[in-house]
Image (tube, rainbow, N blue to C red; front, side, top):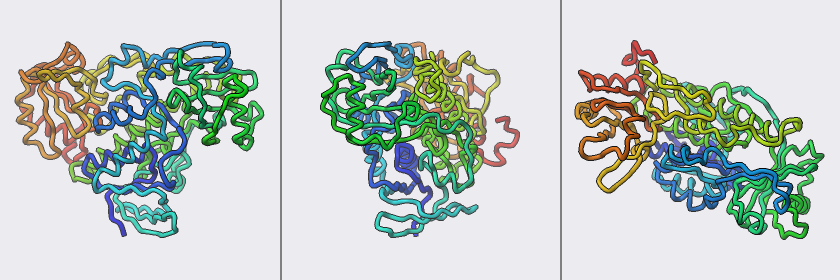
Length: 541
C-alpha cells in the first residue's frame, strides 16, 4: 500500500506541471501515466507568454526555449494555394506586437508537445520525493470522505493499492475519472474531424524567406495546415473536415499521407518520410464542475477545445499551477478546505471563455464542416491578449477592494494591466544596483508582499503573521528601486501601501495606503484568502 498526499493521473504537460509545482510547494505526489513514455507526436505547440512566465518562475524557461522552434517562425501565419504556389494572405498575430510583448518579461514560445514533455518529465523526476511512473494505469478508483483509494496496474499486470488525500485527474478529454464521477460537460461536440500527419521533409526552400508558425493551404479539394516544428525538415500537417472532402481516417496510410503532403507543398516528387498519423475530433466542451470531493479535473479532462488559438495546453498547465498551491496550503494545515472550492470558482470561468473563443476561431477560419463560413479568420484570432493575461478571479481566495479599476471594452482582445485583487500581478521593471529584473521574477515560490518605499510596518507585520511565510520586498526604499514609472502606475501604491501576491502570481489583497495596525490587516487578509474558517466571519468575498 502506498500512502501519498496527492495522486496525479495523466503524464502529459498538465499532470507533469502539477507534479513539479506540488514538489515546489513541499507536497509529495505520485504521477501515473498509462503510456510507456512521453508524447511521440507534436500535438500542441504554442506556449503563450503567461505560461512562459510560469515556467520561468520554476527555472524551466531556458530549457524549454532550447528545444523550441526558432523564434522567427512565431511572428507570422500565412495562407497560400500550396507551399510552393501563389500566396493568398499574411497575418502578423497581435500577440506579437511590441506593445503586447512589453506586457511580460517572458515572450511566447513555439515548442511542440513531444519536445516539451521530456523537459517537464526530467524536472518532475528530479524533484526529490515525488514519484513518476509511466506504463502504469489507474485500474480502479473509490472515493470516500477521507480521500481516495485507487488500484494501479503496470504493464506486466502487477497491481498496487494507493491511498491519497486528493487526486488530480489530468487524464485527457476522454477522462475515465470524469465519466466515473458522473460529471457532465456542456458545449458543442465534434465540431470537425481531423488527421495530424507528423513527417520529415526538407521544406526550407519554401519557408526560408517567409518564416511562419502556420502555413494554411487553400485548395478546392483540400484544406490543411503545415505546423512548424523546427522550421527545416520536421513538420506537422493537419487535415481538417475530412468528411467534407470525402476522406476517412482509414485512408491515411503512409503512402496516402505522402501524396497529400506533396499536393499541399506543390512538389510532386518531394521526398517525404511519414513519422506518425493521428486521427481525432475537435469539440468545445467544459465540465460542469472541476471538483468532486477529493478529485479535481485539470486540462482536457476539464475543458476540451479546438486548437485554433493555441489555448488548450496553456489553460491546462495554468489550471495545475492554480490548484497546486491550494492543495499545498490545505495539506500543510495553513488553509481551510473551502480554499479548494476556489479552484472551480476561478478556473472554470477561464475554461469557458477560452473554449468559446477557440470555437469561434475554428468556425471563422473555414476549417469546419460549416463551409459557408469565411475562409480568413475573425479579427480576434491570435490577438486574444485579454485571454492570455486578463483573467481576473472572483472567489473566496481574493479580498475585494472598494472601487473597481477600468475594465477593457473587449475582454478578449484588450488587457489593462492592474494590481487590483484577483488580477495577474503585472510586469514592471525593478533595479537592484546593476541588476535589472521583473516583478514577475519575485513570484511563484509562495506569498509575496510588495510594499512602497515607506513600508517598514509591513515588514514587521509579515514576521508576526501565522503561517505561511511571506517574502517581503520594498520598492524605492534605497535598495530595490523602480526602473521607470511603470511600478507606481501599475501597482497603485502610496509609499506606505502594500500588495499581497499569491503563489500563482495573482493579487490576493491590496492596501493602497498605510493602515493603523499593519499586522492585524495582513493577518485578516491572509485568513480570508486561505479560508480559515471562523477567521473569515463577516467576509464580503
